[in-house]
Image 1: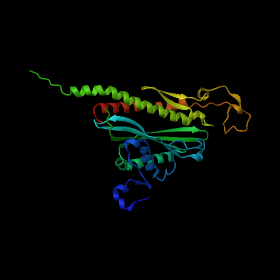
Image 2: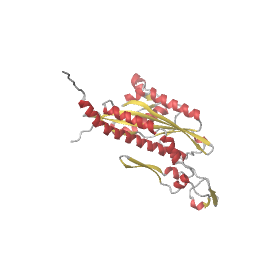
Image 3: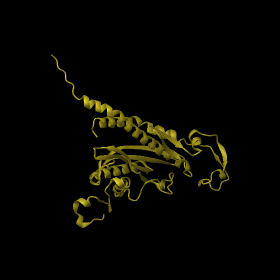
Image 4: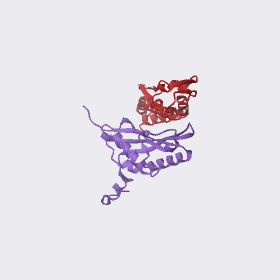
Length: 167
Length: 144
């Protein structure tokens, strides 16, 4: 893990796996929320460099050798009014785990869940509050000779920002 | 003399006014998420050779309260509902990797993918609606 010695304790806490997570702002909300969740989960050795925004090119869904694969979708956002001058965005972000056996699917689920749970403070310092696991849902699909174990993890979060005034 | 004082009329009115709006919004969001989950399950179950069928499964918003799951590939309906076993020529399938080199091949098996996906997700729909309803009630009470 890369550390900058002079930054001290606070900033070190947001250096995750050698990558600096980024502050979320109104103008960069979608990409930065994705980046923060990506960096946090990717920092866990189980997931390093195996997370994609969609099924990777050349991925064969029926080939056992191509598993596991992890897909982090872009955040979905719903805007709400908070006060006269402030609004907030209630959003969800979905992480899909595809494996070819049940045990590793559960292990990856625990890892991802734990990673976000223990890094809630980091997310809060970056502007994402009230992060919690909204649901996890598992399905098993038989594809030819293999069983695909698919777990969907959905986190909710809230992001407050100053509204742009329009007259 | 009996004196009865009722407090909280304003709060109740405010709650009832907000309830309808919040309920519509929360239920609508949950249904949208439900449709995306059905699409994901259907894509996972869809038979794949070129990947065209899975790619063609989309969700379209028809109105604020209505979504439709569309399978745009012309052979989607036959995979879902079945067909009579028959021979086809390789020229009918341009990009197939599995069937490269053959002239004719026999197709006999269909694999439903929308119905099983729907069944899987419907089992959790009531719980999802309950969560959405509770959230709408909490919001209407002023608890975010």
